[in-house]
Amino acid sequence: MKNKLISGAFWMSFGSIFSRVLGIIYLIPWLMMFGKDQNQAQAVFNSAYTPYSLFLALGTAGFPTAIARQVASYNSQNKFRNSLHVFKYGFLFMVLTGAICGLLLYLTAPLIAAHSSVVSKDAATTAIYYLVPTMVILPPMSFIRGFFQGNQDMKPFGVSQLWEQFVRVLFILGATFIVLKVFHGDYTEAVNYSTLATLVGTIASYLYLLNYSRSKLPEYRLLYQESAPLEKQNIRKLFQSIIADALPFVFVGAGITIAQFFDQITFKSVVTTILGATVQQAELMYTYFAANPNKITTVVVSLTIAISETTLPLLARYYDRKDKHKISEVIGQNIDLMLLVLAPTVTLLVALSWEVNGIFFQFDSYGAKLLAAALVSSISLALFTDFFTIIQAMRKHRAAVRYLIVGLILKLVLQIPCVSLWGAFGAIISTFVAFLAASLLAFKKISADSLLPGQLQNSARIIIANLLLCAGTLVVQYLLSLIYLPHTKITAFLYAGIFTILFGFTYLLVLDQTQISQCVLNKTFILKKKP
Image (cartoon, rainbow, N blue to C red; front, side, top):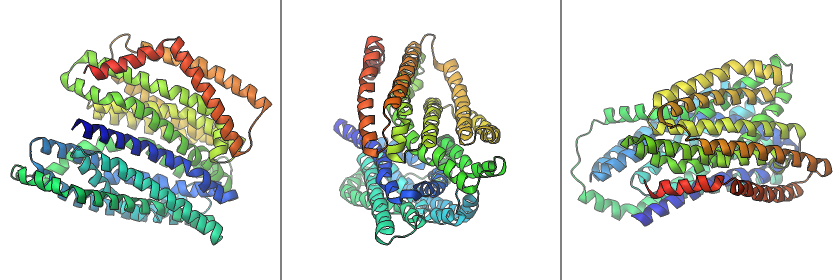
């Protein structure tokens, strides 16, 4: 069992990290193939993908995690027949929700496209249409992953993610090359096939899961034979309970996507009506402040949370035991780890915003400044994700929902005045303020309920050290930019690589000299060894 859990954790982590890496690396060759149309392609692609992500969150509604918990509970009681019974009805339910969400996405596509920051409404509408089939079939596929997870079998979850992303990226690059370079087609057609790649990737994941399930049939037959008899279940009440439990997770989990979707449907009307920008200018600004930076900031937030979440299983355990001292220790350690990774990552990427923007997109001063602003804003997104995960781990779902509503209302209120005053930067500022406010409310709740005095001493030291490091790094980078500024992807990559290595050594030296690393990492080790 121990080896199985270790293997499962490896595949889950590897699948998640590698999928995200692939999801950003492919952008370099993909956008290069579009040439002068790459900004328009990004805008159309993002205008389809953001509402798709939002509808997908509604379509899955936290059911994969819910079914995993339910199956694990039944299996611990030797009720595998009940697990299969729930899985059968749950799968049918997910097929239905996928179909409903797919239909809603299809019907609302013209309205979403009309308000999106794109020049061509028809191009955006068609791109959304290409995502509808995936919207229909992906929720039940996620449900299958949840069933395996509930059986303590994490490998298919991680490996299916790898297959999905790998096949998706291959299809995107292959289809784009054929459309643009072989048949010399229009960029909108290439974007359509790029969105269709999600369907191809999902089918590849399905095929892997089905093949894997065939190899597990003998084991499942044995579990079925040894299982206690099927107990009568009120399936309707069971799923009502699951939905009630899942809805707060869905709403909070979709919080950032909701804000991004709001940017998508409001930005064009504000800048064209109030600032007098053309539709083409609105599309370019949207690409620079949303479509491009979101690819980078998502990785920053995901990496940060992946590190800090290592302490969360302990938090749930100590919360059940009502051990306030240990809860305080774990939360403090979680925040320490998050800041230890988040602060230097943002500093490094902000310092290299010109190079990073040029490597992945194109060398443009305005785009680089917006990327830097978006990276600073990602601090509030990371804080929001981490603090709200802590709150929900302690089952304070109502508080999490209230705080997110406050943040989203603040985003709504600030959007028009901020964009009117500062254009694309204003949209980033409104998001930063909104999620920072929600994060501070969540932190206040965590601090009042669970933190002991002096618990965040290391966090304060980490912040001070990183502020000094940030100031020094930005000064050094500014002085270097006066001497040399790369203008090709290869030179920018080499420059960024050397700068990153030197920055990394400097950061490790700072942590060692201030003894921050010993305090934080040693405490993490102790917590894991002595639960």
